Image (cartoon, rainbow, N blue to C red):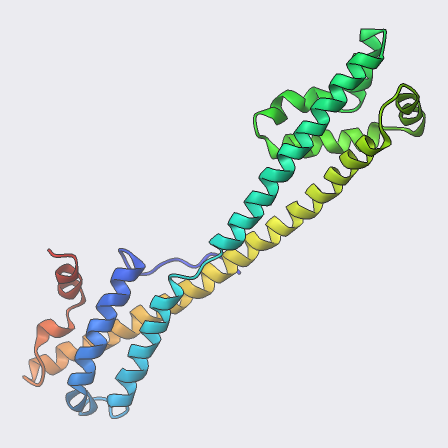
Length: 229
């Protein structure tokens, strides 16, 4: 779903609170409104009031908890992966007598990205893991195992690549869901605002006839009072 533009100014909670005040005024003046629009009876304003209350409740619900859990999982896995990769690098540098040979192995396995990854760049870490797995041929792995590296170390690094790939997919799905939830909510808020402005228009007409007090249906004035202006 595409991003939905907010059609009212100010904060959502302020708009909804002003709408709630106008809905209560409408309920009190429903007999006057029925003279102009017959279906705008008490039940109409009660239904509108309930709609606003539900929207206010929704403002407190978001994907923050889901995003926090995902972030914690990323940070934990990132730290574990960086720890194992650092150990792997140090072991390789220690088991080769020829330092240049050790550096060549590390370069082939993507360790040129290690510095940037240390700065917390998740994308760089993922790239390092991809190069590691694709560059670790059977012959190279056998050579490293013969030099004393643990098979568990290789298994862990392969697992990080797989898990980060799955986690990235999960994060993208959650982002899309968050955008969709935000769009749906904004559509509802825009609709509530339009309904409120319709009530205000009719309220002004009724005020001209002396049937209601005009200020009770001027959105800007109600909003200003709520802000203490």
